[in-house]
Image (cartoon, rainbow, N blue to C red; front, side):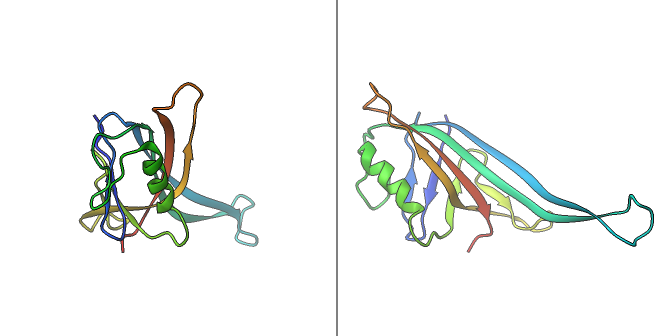
Length: 151
């Protein structure tokens, strides 16, 4: 069972119900720019510019009719309401969201590992929903979240 929740800046927490999350993946990549350095000596002299590391979390699952509300302080049970709530997170001027799953609750506060772990804050980079013929009680979805510095 994968426990996943997202908390918005208004303090509302959307908690996916048991079985709605199929997989949470995290991926880190470093941006490296390698350029020749003219006039710096031998022809194979190069300059390396590290653009930092970016962490991306991908959440894959399927929204189903909820037996109880998915959002604290609101009534969100239907598949359509859940879909709209998730879409609204990325609407307009997006702010940092607090993300929590079994293994993604905390992230390093600094790139050199010297600061203590802090809550994982993300912005929605991309989301995708599939309405499939013959499956009115399930909408598969994917969210791609970029980890950012917290507020």
